[in-house]
Length: 387
Image 1 (cartoon, rainbow, N blue to C red):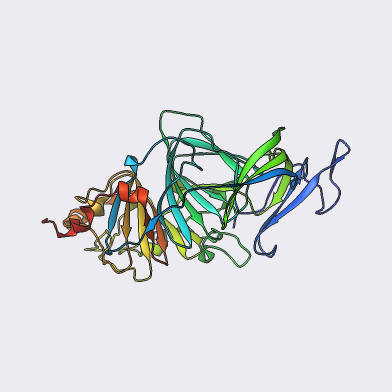
Image 2 (cartoon, rainbow, N blue to C red):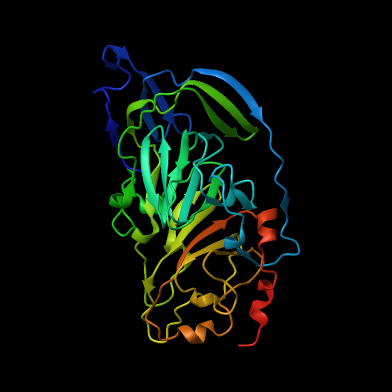
């Protein structure tokens, strides 16, 4: 969980009258799991409940295809369509009932949106963007993960720059959190965890926008609704609590190394409902005599493994066609490992420069049409090529 933060103008006690210039602020309690876990208290200038219109938003159903015949897949995401905004312009790659994995290359500011179906984890492969929400403003750039809690009203602002703004998005069916094993019984990140509270960035201050008749897209598990609010939802003058959007840079992840090759759980960064997210960052190789420093052939018998290659040298995938912007899918039931010749080439090297995000799901993933459109269909046979 993120640590406690207090931002803006907040009264000394909870649930008491809070007046600014004689005007009573509207208090909102936003909480998880029936208000029995993390929460935040927000103080609005206007009633956050005041909608003046609502309409259903129709959308074409997104077709998903089973991974049949069962194959490892290689997706070249830099061949995906570019443009639009990073919310309505998302292109669905892979999904099951627990998580939807999408890609977007945004060049426009998104509409105001609230995902009431679950938390979102957004990774910026390149470029810069700004997350604006009822909690304030969060500036993010290449290598940042951003966790957006369920039902946070927000928008993504794209202001242009020398690089395209590329997003990998995981939309969960529940909550995304820091792994329990990194946390003390009272929620502090332990010594030995691969990051600390100092690495987490929250909104710096309130963001107040005075507008009227403001549309907000609200998505839940039955569909999408467009509300028209009497006043802009960004009218929060202060808030406190442990529930808010936050950013964490993959470059601040501290790798765990050993004499011999460490298993993938040492790279874990986040937990979601029936999936985990891991960060592979530049690190020294294993230092034991005759240690083989890249992954052994392995069968993760309970998971589909998704790897997004977002920087550096992907040593174990040499000769496979994997490059910056690639995604590999190694499904449960397929034994996978380094490409032919990779093991020999890695022995004796001091370290790796790879940068990758891994999402392991505990239920099979189906494949979206975008993924099929950018698939390298030769990848499945790359292990059988001569060395």
